[in-house]
Length: 198
Image 1 (cartoon, helix red, strand yellow):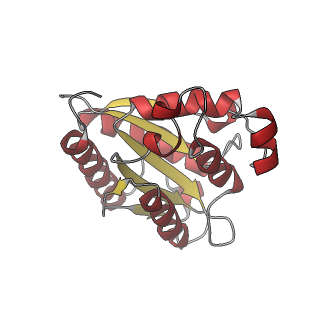
Image 2: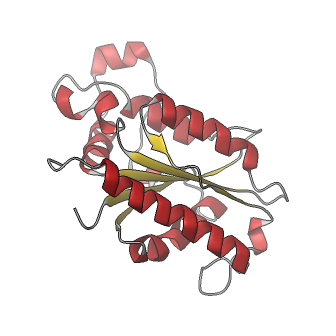
Image 3: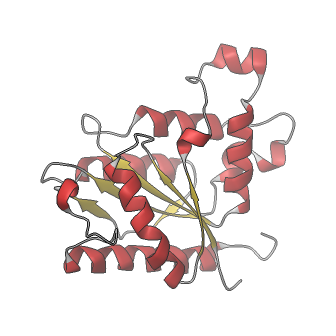
C-alpha cells in the first residue's frame, strides 16, 4: 500500500464550527503526508438518537450503514472535535454508537469490524484558551475501546476563533508543526496496520 485511505470527520455539523475549519485545514497536509483523504460531513449522515428498541424494530439506519461502508473501506480515521462540557459532542457519540452496531444484512463489514485494527488520531478546538484538551482523552478512550490504534500525537487548538489564517491554515507556526506531526504519524501508522486485503 502506498496511500492509506483516511476518513476525516468533525464532531460538529454547525455551519461555522471551528472543528470543521480545523478538519478542512488537515486535508492538504494529510495528503502531503501520503494519505488518500476522504473528508465527510456528519450532517450528511443523519441518524436518530441510538435506542436499542428502535434498532430491534427498524434495524440499522441507512445513514449508519452507509458510513460503516466508508469506515470499513478506510485504513484510518481522523476525528476533530469541540469540547462540550469537558467531553465529546452528542453528534459524535451517537455516530460512533450506531456505527459500532452489527448490521444483520452485512455483519462481516459492520459493527466493530469498521474500527478494529485501524489507525486513528484526535484533534480538538475551543474558543477558549484550553484548546479542548479535556475532550482529547475522552475521544482516545472511546476509539481505543473500539479497537483503534490512536497515535500519541494530538493537538488542542485554543482561541480557535482567531487561530486560522486567510488561507484556512493555522496561523501559529508551532501549532502547524504539531498538526503536521500528528497527521504524518496517522498516515504512517495506517500503512503499517493495513492488511494487504484492504
